[in-house]
Length: 304
Ligand code: MLT
Image (cartoon, rainbow, N blue to C red; front, side, top):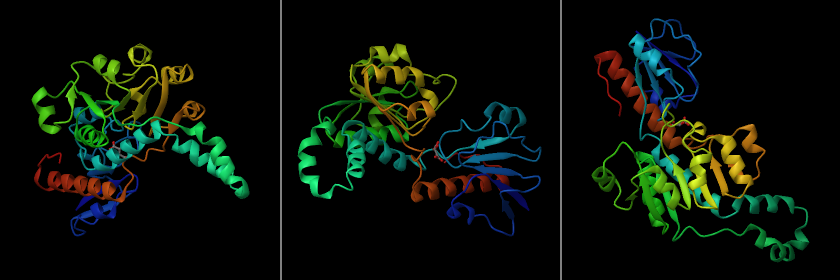
């Protein structure tokens, strides 16, 4: 019998794949062979000696102590691409939210709920407060051309945007094959100087921590907008807030709220909803379950 400890709620689509005559699955289980996790951090968790594998039902692995796992020979899996479409759709929504003041408009709507008689007059008087530019013809800089970045780039082209992409890990040809719409920026700096909108689609690592800081923001266009559904730690948040307050940046939409960002009127925080669709949750749980079964039963390591 293999024992799987689940952390977080994992979609039943994945859990049901484990044959019950071979697997015991529970959130509390002694001596687990493997851990199946979504967003919970394992950095401060004492991993029992019996653990041989950890599968993350999601793309980022910054919630897993990778070096400690390598030292102990624990295999770590993630599910790249499993939630890419869900994140892409939220990124496109974020792009629109960063441009058109839809949130301001909805808040206004709520604020006048008891003034039904005055609505037509109020609309005429106040609609100019919520004006925002169109995306068509503007330049989007996509940082990171993995599964999500490429999908965002393609859809942004469909919205009429010019798209430039930067990814230090893929070649010109690979980028071209993935998305014929993306023009390649040779450096992050050249992307930042040209983009009206910048969308981040890279993992959080020691190299990418605080990537967008005051120095990088300085070279961006005045009035640029940033979308960060990847990880909060990719930006220096204090520098972002300073730039928003100085109108250097016009908006920052992020899936990673903090108290400081919530207090800043020009930041728009979403409660980490990028992968929160039933489809993405099912995909990731199924991928992670298959990876674990393959590994525990046959020793195969596959990350798809
Ligand atoms: C990811 O890294 O893919 C997301 O953080 C997944 C999630 O929200 O569970």
